[in-house]
Image 1 (cartoon, rainbow, N blue to C red):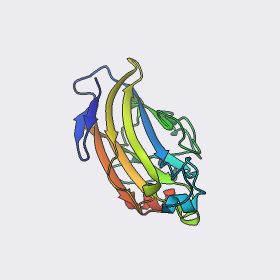
Image 2 (tube, rainbow, N blue to C red):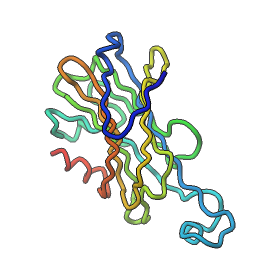
Image 3 (tube, rainbow, N blue to C red):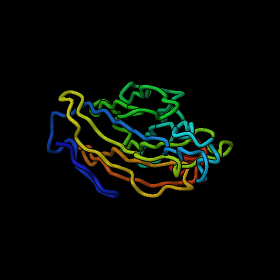
Image 4 (cartoon, one colour):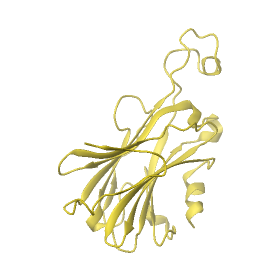
Length: 205
């Protein structure tokens, strides 16, 4: 049964599950539904009043850190570079709308193959072209990050990002990190006003 995490919680992944190697990190979100009558409500006036939410392109990325630092541009896995250099981290590709149930984007991580020089993998979601489109995470709901054991196909944990992220354009959702020879997960849930992926990585330089 999956563990439901709260913001700030940390959990062991491999210590109690020594056979664990490959995990899938799923990230999901939905556009907030707008007013149906087309009259009333800020979102109704901005987006025509239909029941469908605004078209918001959220992008999930992985920042691979060496001693908690972003060292090289090749240490970034995102829609423009779907695989880490040694293949241990693989992004399945960009979802442009966030429509539908379940994961919107997925990242597969082979924990045993992640090079030893990396001590942390940071999972972030940002809104593409957020400034020009005047969009923020107040227009997004039901955001989550979850981990699945790909061999057993069991969901191991889930963290629902339920804070009010109005005005925030990036979410630092969670982290996979090493402690000795073991891997752990931290539910971060931090919202920032970074407007692009290049701004986000500067936090770790």
